[in-house]
Length: 152
Image (cartoon, rainbow, N blue to C red; front, side):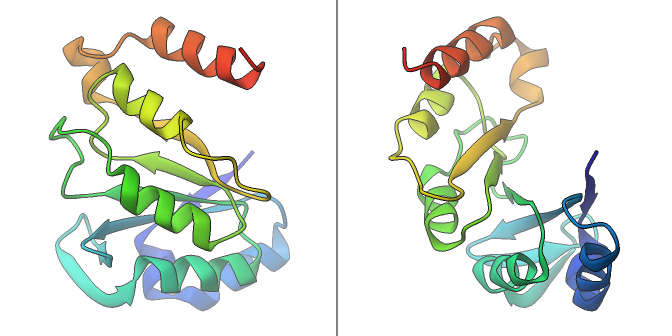
């Protein structure tokens, strides 16, 4: 029910604005960042845009969420960049979905331990390698998020 835009969004921000007008409630932007800067084209090109600058612009356009990937950590299994992800989530009102670096259940616990945000906050996490490498149990992660979500 959502369309996720990445490099196209960064290279043609007006495209996101138009897409949000035509398909309100269905647009998500993926921002891949390193040291606060946005990278595109499979992380080959480092832009002059900051993650926050583009997140705010796309928020104004009407996106539903931002997928934020810390590319310094993605696939490295070094732990999620809680500080950068939380800083972004605190600075915008649409939800942030954390990506990059998730290695074990403690990474998800660290995200869940952050204070709630009135309008957005961190609403999800993307993990891949940790599951197929066996360092993160999907049933354990789901049980943890459901327990926290139900007040447990």
